[in-house]
Image (tube, rainbow, N blue to C red):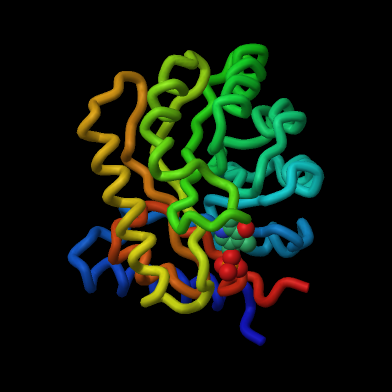
Length: 230
Ligand SMILES: *Cc1c(COP(=O)(O)O)cnc(C)c1O
């Protein structure tokens, strides 16, 4: 099997090619290496190979890893479902929380951010495929949620995130990526104060090239860097 370094180079190369194919600057696309279930020593290997952004799904698991890797200047992203009772820890640990999808969670994050003297950067997770089992705010409610969160002083909205169905079938996922971008454009038109819509977090191992073509500014890639999860 290839080393993490080789796999990382391969992913970066694919990002660059996908960006160039649609006339985008590859530097405008951030690679978030998804390290859920990956032990700290392998995460360290990835950081030493050049990873700057790491994504974790579980607060408890992330806490141990982050605390054992504090000597590295990397950004930590929370990409999993966040329970309100974990908001306190999430605010302490993460630079960007991708998965905010309710006012209740936002209020708790805001309160915790206030306590920590922090402006917490967040993305709004949208259930663009309207699957009942998925987390994320519905498309119809998204603008309203953004508007309400924009009044919370210790939260700063940076954009949208989605997790569509049909893993590893890029052409079936593509319409969901373009729908997220369209929603982002609609929200921009509302010119809501105190928020920005610059980031689109979409695309994983099986479909990140399509996501880049549809405007992703952050791709969340696990398997292609760390190998299959157990
Ligand atoms: C696990 C996970 C990823 C990465 O998936 P891969 O297919 O391994 O690249 C991306 N985003 C979220 C929200 C995840 O849970």
